Amino acid sequence: MSHQEYENPLTSRYASEEMRRLFGAQRKFSTWRRLWLALATAQKQLGLPISDAQLAEMRAHLDDIDWDAAAAHERRLRHDVMAHVHTFGDNCPTARAIIHLGATSCFVTDNTDLILMREALGLVIGRVVSVIDALASLAARYRDLPCLGYTHYQPAQPTTVGKRACLWAYDLALDLAELEHRRSSLLARGVKGTTGTQASFLALFGGDHAKVRKLEELVAGEMGFAGSYAVTGQTYSRKVDAQVVEALSGVSQSAHKAATDLRLLANRREVEEPFEEEQVGSSAMAYKRNPMRCERICGLARYAMSLSANTSSTAAVQWLERTLDDSANRRIVLPQAFLTVDAILSLYHNVATGLVVNANVIAENLRQELPFMATENILMAAVSAGGDRQDLHERIRRHSQAAADALKQGAPANDLLERLAADPAFKNVVLDEAVTPAAFVGRAPQQVDEFLAEVVAPIRKKYGNGGAGAAPIWV
Image (cartoon, rainbow, N blue to C red):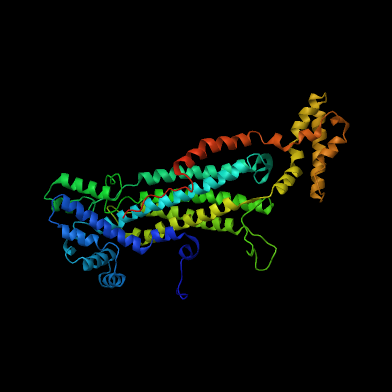
């Protein structure tokens, strides 16, 4: 390992080996060779003079790439596809003449990108399902644990810890539906030729349109696609990339939101992300337990979200049948979008499965604010006991403000109930009953149950334990 040159942190620190290998050079160029074999096999089936021996020779050299030879060819030819055509031809001298027959570079580059995106989406789907499963387990465990709710990051009507976990899980459930749609919608670029007209293949088959159509059907089927895009230029529409990366951005948005919530709650000591025995929170402040995993999620998510603007711009500036300014860009953006989201979801799963919920702190934070939220119930109870609504409202207003001012001055606890108990106007109200936390969470526990049954259960049934969502590798 060289320490002299820059290394991408996505590959050296963050993304999984599985995703790194998927976008590695071996997988990419081996897939090119499989596409050349699929093309030649279909061409032979449709009557072109290609021998079984040529196909067998190609089949025997799908993975044994001579990387030095490929690099030498590319230095000479300044063209990566032709460099690998020659390198494959060096391995397959008998088949050299029919490798890449009738095809343009985008036959291998675009079709490979679609294959890799399809599989990468499967990996992402599996990770999303695993996080949903973890959050659902968290929700079930804390379905009825009351906690302070917030609007505008100000104390609001109580909810439950489990209901809040459902909010995070539901965002991912919505993302899951979009990822599934994008994955199932992917088609092959197919065999379209240099400008998408299939002119070269029509010439190969002596003007037989039916054979050209059949060729595309056979190759797409061999790649595992239901069909090919109806029309293309030299490339498939870059809107496809934009749509896929936008779906990945959606996952990043959901993870960022949840991680931000957890960072805010960690500040209040209500929850803590996993913290290992010898983990250091700060190089200076030894006592600290920074939410570094959630902070990393947010940092990576910002990057992933920014990539959707890039792919949208690429789709917008493609000239006529094609322009090459997408090529260098896509080599960076597409793999990094998947690697980043892969890293985000791995972190998210780690946090969701190891989250520490400090129930006593949650109860104390709620206890400090609940008397203020109970004032409407107290007012109604006092009116029902025969009091004057307007007079009671004014008394509650004055007592509430006095209690709030005392807290601002450093009072250890909210004494609003004690103030109201000392006021004769509230003598007929059982104040303790008015501030029972469970009475303020509405249907939150039942909403958790319903969400788990109606949304999570079908996902668990579809994907099983561990969220296995990846398609088999096309080999």
